[in-house]
Image (cartoon, rainbow, N blue to C red; front, side, top):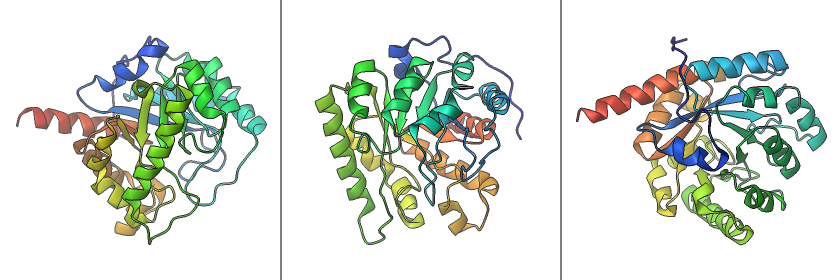
Length: 285
């Protein structure tokens, strides 16, 4: 682990309406630290499922430079996750979310259920991260519009289909999501798009989405990329999730070069260092 000095987040002391502009105003991409409080996450399942461990991990990621803490209480891993009820999801969040939010860095709630997102927003979360891009829960868009909070719209599919043009599929999905958002009254200033690396895609399609990320700038919205520890890395160099740091950083540096403004990562210190050094080198050019 690369040592990092504790720091004050660029968006500490945030007001809800100002969160996204502050994140996007930095000279390098903001880093979203992943905090899974599930027993079955694909990369760290069970490691942070107790309130004490979750809070300690949140503090550690903030000290390492995380600009956002993304809390998820239901595994949405791309391959073989089991759905849970809203009650079970809330049961995992209730002992810890408010304490994590009190640390002073913006918290996003990673959930596809409007009931869970609504509760989390009431208890300190300020961003909604919907892995089904407003297309799974019919009440999600209305909730986001009513609360006026930023929402991350992620591309997803039930199953990967190697025969499709994945970039066309992503664009069509985003067009549907943005239509839902507009009809609900969600401001475009509160929308971030995520191509959903590893979700409903073959490993090759995940790499295509990264290679052609610039095409998604046509929507005129900020982009988030989360390639951290994803399976496509192991198709290039065989590795288990915890052994994919190098591949994750390679993907995220390329994503940043292609316009990603938020990077979602498990390994915060290393990701922050890579993004900041790359930005410093570019400044010398």
